[in-house]
Picture 1 (tube, protein in one colour):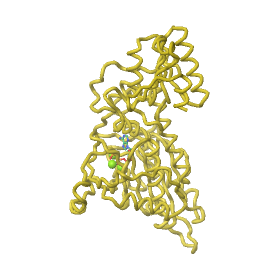
Picture 2 (cartoon, rainbow, N blue to C red):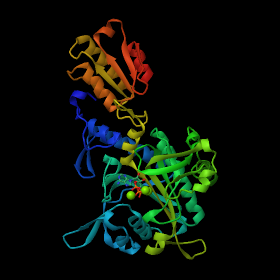
Picture 3 (cartoon, rainbow, N blue to C red):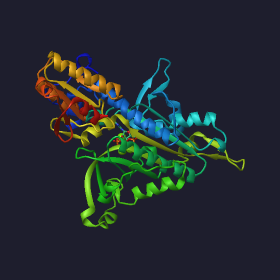
Picture 4 (spheres, rainbow, N blue to C red):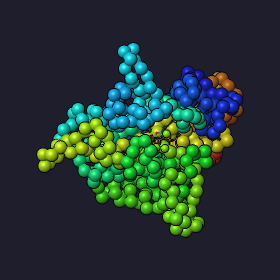
Length: 439
Ligand code: ATP
Ligand code: MG
Ligand code: MG
Ligand code: MG
């Protein structure tokens, strides 16, 4: 992409309404624009990152054997009356009436809708296990929308639902989700710690939230620092294996890690003092096993091997995709701007031409731009006729991992400058070598 042809409305001033770094930086970097309280337009740069995160979520869900689909944002109130949640959900639910006077709502989550699909089409245990998911906009009329996309009213969420014959099978689904989520967050360059949590209006007993440690997080968390040493890395996981998934879940759930809702002082104090940590965290996902709560209420049954009709065991599992954009920035920025982890960066490298219009500099930039594209990388070439200082500031703000700086002085010696955004370190080297380093 050439910056002269892009739409990147960066702001010079720091917007006064933004209280935390990620919100400020997303506005300044031209990623989002507020449409109205808690509702945002995703401008091209923000949208590109949102899509990258969405793709990672899809890839990891499909890898775990879960099946993508798409449900609508608007739902009929009748289904929610069946589960009893139409009244329970309260003011967070946006209620709408259509021209025929029918009660509708903008879905805050989809347990009812998916259970309705399931009961219409599945009747035998032979069709289980089944996990369906979608990534779709949700609406919750939050009392205090704030921190930009972190607590929006309209937000983008992956939600998945497992249907199983037995509790044991449903616990495998639970474990499989935990593992696939750990992998998802790791690919995004994040450490998200699973913590025992409280189930709230979804209902049920078994639930973990995934929290990214950050001072600006809204949850208070208590954990054994041993958990922060864990990582999945490249290890192979057989998602069909109960034991494989359960072993990983055991590893991650053995060290103490809880939110304030489930915190237990006595257990916490049993951890050696040096490892006892209290901090704040951003909730980027949650998994639930809730048994037959919805299948009982809505009549989602299958015929078991013994011929008897039995309600299915279910769970639901969510990842806050749009919130993650903010969470990644909270975890990875400095005073100059965002620092994208390699796995989610909108462009792989920026090319800064310090003397636009200089025939040699222009030609060298074009050549580097073409080579990076040919390698399947996405460079962002700042080909605008602007001061070098302004170009550097923009690149630092939008946080691409690498910058290649090209100018007549370096070219005389046959070199360009390659700068790492994270460390700030630069080295001079011939253009071909700079390209090789990025490949
Ligand atoms: P919170 O405690 O932050 O209100 P929640 O527990 O109500 O979140 P869940 O029902 O568990 O949310 O939804 C799954 C995920 O969706 C959350 O883990 C979070 O990442 C994301 N999410 C929830 N509410 C919002 C929101 N208002 N804006 C952006 N993301 C959200
Ligand atoms: Mg909430
Ligand atoms: Mg919560
Ligand atoms: Mg939650």
